Amino acid sequence: MLDAVVVGAGPNGLTAAVELARRGFSVALFEAMGTVGGGARTEELTLPGFRHDPCSAAHPLAVNSPAFRALPLERYGLRWLHPELPMAHPFPDGTAAVLSRSVGETAASFGPRDAGAYRRLVEPFLPKWDTLARDFMSLPLTALPRDPVTLARFGLLGLPPSTWLTRRFRDERARTLFAGLVAHVMAPLGGFATGAVGLVFALAAHARGWPVARGGSQAISDALAAYLKDLGGSVHTDYEVKRLDDLPPARAYVFDTSPTALARIAGFGGHYANYRYGPGVFKIDYALDGPVPWTAPQARTAGTVQIGADSTEIGAALRAASREGRAPDAPFLITVQPGVADPTRAPAGKHVFWAYGHVPNGWTGDLTDAIERQLERYAPGFRDRVLARATAGPPELAARNANYVGGDIATGAVSGLQLLLRPRLSLFPYATPHPAVFICSSATPPGPGVHGMSGHNAAKAVWRRLRQP
Image (cartoon, rainbow, N blue to C red; front, top):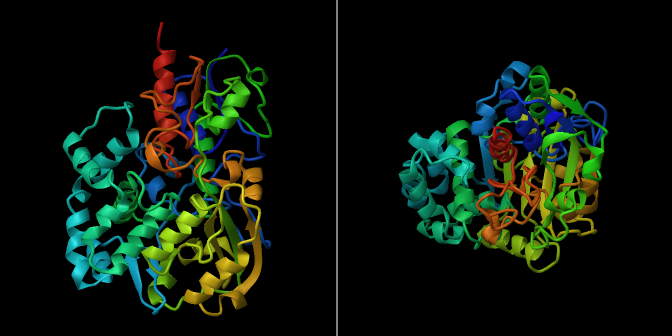
């Protein structure tokens, strides 16, 4: 009998399997798709030689993840490549605010009236960032805080809505960039703890940047899988699990799946009936005949570029998708251009590029024209560079990855108490009604993103059970 079986080979499932194997437990991992990866894959979606990341592409949380930093992933081929700027936020007038590795450069891009306020916001946390990240991403009750005072100070700033935090800024440039940071998790700007979301992304950039993985996000998943195999674990792909009886006997079962799928497979009935899924996204992967022709020079050297004219426009786009049940007229866009740091992604002189906007959960429309109208506002002539495009709305995203219910790439709404307390109101979020069954997906704390910490935290709960006499 195996010690543990893991279902789902996304970053969290892979990390949970690795953590258990590192501690001497026998582990087998089962994945429904033909390759490992989940939200960290790389595929030729458009033309031969153009390597796209179907979901995640820039990785501020991965490079700062306490779980990943403790693993020898570089030994298995993972290389982080850093663009000159982690992120830029261009404005219609051709200027841009930036999120730089340098706090000073970032503050200066906001203008003299907000430079000091931004420094005072982030600089107290940077010397203690590694400890803060570990404490923040290990909650709840998976580890005692190493620095409870700093964590409490962070909570006082981060738990209120982001709109409260941005009141300290006098001009729109800083408010807009910060609103874009919050929108990465598709949360309404006035929601509970959204200030913490923006702060985490900003501090991550200053600490270690927003890099891309050389060759594509698949390199993260492949490194984890290779390490798992070296530890004696086994990986089985093309293996869809429809019920627990489909799996070999084991002392523990760990699911990197949505709560909906887990309830169906394990027969938990309505145990997760109150779990909410959030808005979906409409994503376009592009093969380009050259770099994106941004008007703002800073955007040409940034790995990630946020698109939204101001915080009002960003807030309206989020409300339309999450509360009003419609696609926004001017969608807020997150875009990534890996080629500014990694020329291996496309043939010489060509580029891959992706952009997505928020839409209602399960939306079946086409946002292509609205997305490209937004891009043309900040990069005139963009459409002329397009060689091919691959579009994916909520139905296509859910078909590619069963965890993306209704196109929700966060595997659950990141709003209200569910931002922190997911998938249920519980001090033991990785446990389920069955004592041998656990959940480790992005539906558990600390939530969405490629960081492996949900898997790491769940593995702790599993090995504590396995060590019981």
